[in-house]
Length: 301
Ligand code: PSU
Ligand code: MN
Image 1 (cartoon, rainbow, N blue to C red):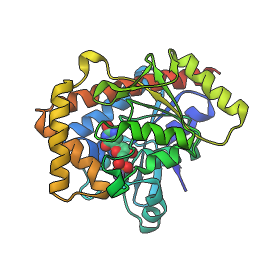
Image 2 (image 1 turned 120 degrees about the horizontal axis):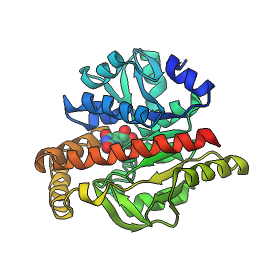
Image 3 (image 1 turned 90 degrees about the horizontal axis):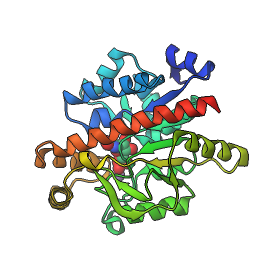
Image 4 (image 1 turned 45 degrees about the vertical axis):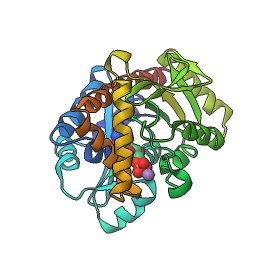
């Protein structure tokens, strides 16, 4: 059912490093035409590190692991391309629909195809106002049941970060800071919350993955939280101001469900004069590079 590209298949067979990349960030997380450039640039970053990129999406009802350039272009530019969480995959497949995959859908397809390392920007999580809306990203539940290593810059700062960290603890998902004992804040290097574990090299991350397998514990993810470098982060004061406005606008316009995250991300880009985009891209680039290095260390294990 899953179409694995020839390049990805060959790399997996030869135990060469492969990195899964999500597509929602391309279709719904970044403005056009920058999104297509970024998608291709992220694939290049993996190649520079000696790995093979596997961008994941659903096209005409078929899940793809590894896209060619035309397929990446469809994800970036096709009007009406859907946003697919893992629950949407069977529906999209049966309907012959096309969609970009979120962290949850990407992690599921990557794991099914035999990939172990995945890079994204920021994970979904518990939204502020959760007590009213019950909006918690499906990312968390799926990561609690899937053995994959996810490199991210924490969770999106539009979320309730401490509540999300608590949910990850409750769900039994391992979290480690990369080179830091602070949980990163997506656009910011530090969310203001600590993490219990720190990993300092790709080899150390691969050791943890090996221990997960050796223990044969119930399947769950390893979250490697990699901060955006401080010189590239969004100004914290600007972040706090614009985010407060964004949350008010979201409520005033009655935006709910799947539309909330793209709405807030877009609001931040427009009201920070693109500075949030710069920080977002710096974070994603760093994550993809680190993921490629982890995949290489994992391939050597
Ligand atoms: N990180 C980004 N940009 C994004 C997302 C993450 O830098 O657009 C996407 C991811 O695909 C994540 C999704 O899985 O947002 C979460 O959406 P929701 O809150 O609706 O579950
Ligand atoms: Mn949501």
